[in-house]
Length: 423
Image (tube, rainbow, N blue to C red; front, top):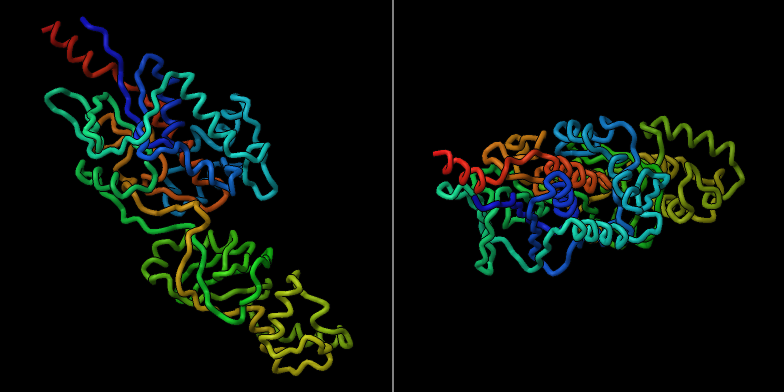
């Protein structure tokens, strides 16, 4: 009998694709593994992540709390994280002589702040395992041959790859989702996640680059509320609080066509009326001091001056001379500045979507299709997305590790030969 090897085709040369291929190789040392990447560039998203530093994961301890950072996939990710979590990722890279550091905000980066360190590690580890890497291989079709008992992957170059298992790690990819529909999978309609807010309002013009470390953002006529650092930009608003709000509200905001009223609370005060009374007391206490020279509530000076200006408080005025009507306006602007959002912008080049393969159709113990044996998935091709801070990469590492750790049968071709000899 002719000896055959288990063959695995990995579709997608990104983080999940490489990590899964390496894990498959570790668990199937005699397997033939090929990565197909449609572009000419491998691990492109890894390179640009974190401004070129690569936000590998997050340092949050406790798997349950970690899973709460996935607007889609929260429940499904908990089990996988119990098998391979963020600290397993850190150890995996450390074992390959890639040192990682956990920053104050929890984000994890290479110690040298260079994403190419992660890229080089993954590519070198793949090559060590003799994984074949092919670029410019755009997959056109995937199907199971009942007569040959084998998977077939066809590319736009009319090349046909036969294999025992297919591992799909293409990220957000409309073409792949259409192929998967043909295989019977349900695709949850993708919409953008992790985006910034476009706002054209003279009241915030000229504030570009200013950040405030703690605000509450609330979207009117919804339950969407988030707290955290806010950044003013040329096009409107960004920063962690906006990105988190956009992730949690991805589906709802898409339905609103990204047009809605946003309320900003620059303080921890919840009621503008009681806050007005607090400002009246400050007026007595600060009496002869100029309002603009003494920003309150840790608000940056330029932002404080602007909030005063839109509350009809002159830059040179002293507290004792501020009219109560202006003070009431200031209380309202500090507690609930209302801005109209008119659209969205992609957050840098780090495009993330909600949507993808319906999670109900995935066996999360193997990251395998419930509809087809030996069809595996990892990363954003699934309806899983995390907030900013390394959670999306961790979803890729975790799901890819589980897929690659799944026990594969002996080559189906070999099984067929054995059965034929027995007969």
